[in-house]
Each structure stands twice: as structure tokens, then as C-alpha cells.
Length: 313
Ligand SMILES: NC(=O)CC[C@H](N)C(=O)O
Image (cartoon, rainbow, N blue to C red; front, side, top):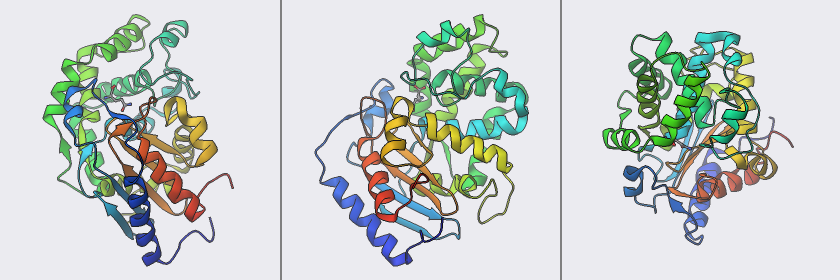
């Protein structure tokens, strides 16, 4: 990706400009309320961060405020599971776009309890099952993994969000029990959901997330620490699935208009990987009908256009 890096000062100014443009947009979309604790978040937060591979950090708005990472946790879970399971993981979850909402149950019965990909809820619940089965303390292992990637030991679960997910998790429980009936969940459903809800309920800032996912822009090696998080083949696969499924049923539009591997969550976070350059993270809690951050998409798209970051150009 030659020619991407702009003078650092310019990038910082650009981020501030993009946040100001996003703030001026009409208030479209709504904060997720099917998990009641998420509905309490101030919808006007706006954060944007870029962490480059050489360690430079550019921020604007609320880039340092922790928020609920929700489905962005699926990227960390998948990375851990791929390292632990090897290719046997792909017997239990596929790598195809689903063309359905992130929590849809219909396809799962037709396809005998094998989820389309690890980034819809059903797929992430299978991934959570593999973690629960392979770690004696999967929640602790998950937190330590994320803390070390983000180089921030203060990252922790938001207990209110975790409780709220448990109390309002009927649909995820339905997905898990259906998969259990097909033999695709090995541990107890209760245990698996507990882990899944936990990882969704971690709080991280835009800077934390952009730093934590640096290895995906750097062939699996974590910038700054030089830790080998995964091999280049796994890096390629994770980025490929983020490109095809990371934005759920809007992944095609995102590839069409932005052109970066990305993952969104219903907390309003959106991460985008720019190979050989760094990671962008945007946050704005109001969601569009696909469950993706409305202003987050605007911010990542504008930045990608301004800096010429598309991997398809
Ligand atoms: N898209 C999301 O961010 C969904 C995550 C949320 N915890 C759920 O399971 O419904």
C-alpha cells in the first residue's frame, strides 16, 4: 500500500474534520435497546482513532471513552479459536456470507446447525463453545488476550451490560439450543452463553480497539510488541471473512463503498483494517437497520476515501 501515509499532522486534522462532519449529520438511526443496558448510552458520543503500524496514534472526539464492544469481540474470539482448533474449526462453522440479519435463526435449521460464518451470532456462539471447551477459565483467557493486544490492563467487563445480555438473551439461547440439538455445541448451553455474553460486554475505547487489532494489518505480528498473534494464513482468512461478513447483511455495500475488512457491533463501534498501514476505529451509538453504526460508517468511509485506503483500488 504505497503512498498511503500522510504527514501525521495532516491525518490528525483530517480526523477532527471527519468527526465535525459526522456531528453535523441528521440524527439518523437509534441506539440498540434490545439489550436494555445499551439503551442508556448517550447517543451523541462520537469517537474516531487511527493507530498506525509504527505506533502513531491519531484521535478525534471521544476516542478515549470506553464503550461496549459487542460483536467486535467476535474477531478476538475467532483469532483465539483458530489458533486452538486449527482447520477442524471449519467443520463446525462455515466461511460464507449469510445474507441474513446477525441474529437470524431460519437458515440455521435448513443448514443443520452449522452457522454460515463466525461473525453472525450463531457462528460466534460455536466459537465460544470451542473456547469454553479448550480453556479451563475461558473468560479470564479472553480478557488477558484482549488486554495484552491493546496493551491496556484496565480493560474489563461492564457488569451491567453482561447482566442485561443474560436477562434478555432469549434469541441467542434459542440459537444455542438449536445448534446443541444438531450436536454442534459440546459444552452446556448455559456455560457457552455465559462466555459469549461476557466477551460482548467488554468495554474498550476506539484507541484500545484500533491498537488491539494491529496484527491484522501486519500479517499476524502485533506492532509494538512483535508478538506473533497468528500466522499469515490465519490473518488472511480473518480479514477475508471480515470483508465478506463483518458488517452482516451490509457487507456487500460496505465493500462496494469503503473497501476494507471491517467489523461492527451493536454498541456502535466499527473497526476497519488497512493492511500495511494500521487500523481505524469509529464509534457512534446510533445504529442503522442492519445493526451497524450510522455515523461510524460515514466516518470510516470518508476517511478511507480521503486517504485512498480501499484494498480494491
Ligand atoms: N451485532 C452485535 O453486536 C450483537 C451482539 C449482541 N451481544 C448479541 O448477541 O445480540
